[in-house]
Amino acid sequence: MTGRATIGDEVPEGHAASLANACETPMRPARQLIAALMLPLAALAACTTTEDANRALQSRWIGQPAERFFAAYGPPIDEYPLSSGKIYTWRGGDKTRYIPPVYSRPEPARTIVRTETRQDGSGQTVTQTRVITRDPFWEPEVITPGRYEQLFCELQINTDASGVISTIRASNDTTGNGFSLSRCAEVLGVGK
Image (cartoon, rainbow, N blue to C red; front, side, top):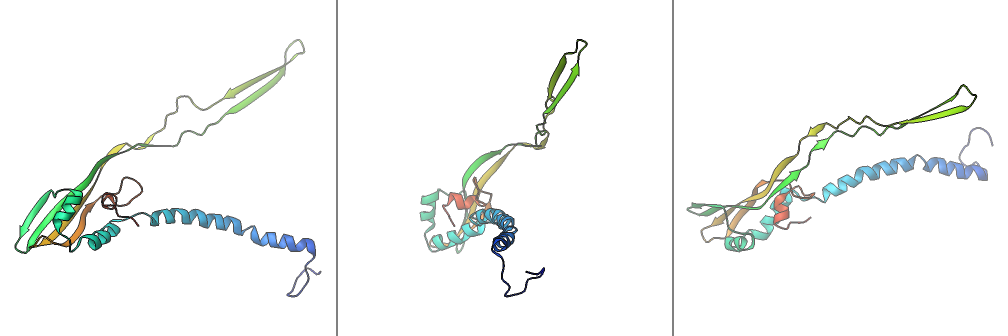
């Protein structure tokens, strides 16, 4: 076989396997990288948002009596009468979540072993080993302090004169308690 191969050339047996491996080896890290990037995107795509909650609320509750919603989720916190119906403000899912502080990374664990060998005056060999570890006085720095965060869902519900819901939407929605991007979605049982 010459230095250059052309289409139709035969490849010796040992070289065929190495060519196949050479073509596959660079792809493995690329596939792993793609998989590593896609996993968080897939997890994020599974999260419910305020828009998801609004769509689910509108499809489930528009045309239903407001009393049915309040019987299921609790009474409104405010109402404003109109000549054509009422505007209700409903709030639920109140929770306080503690977010712990974030510290700088600990000093890398360094262990240095020093071994010294010397001869004493009598001709004996003396070996001394010392182990040095990290600085005992090093303390991590606070990057963000711990804090409390209020979680809740607030809805605006408009009804007609007969008390039937004409519009419903999340007017104030915090992040959820878990991985959800919508507290309203959690409280009202909206899933993707």
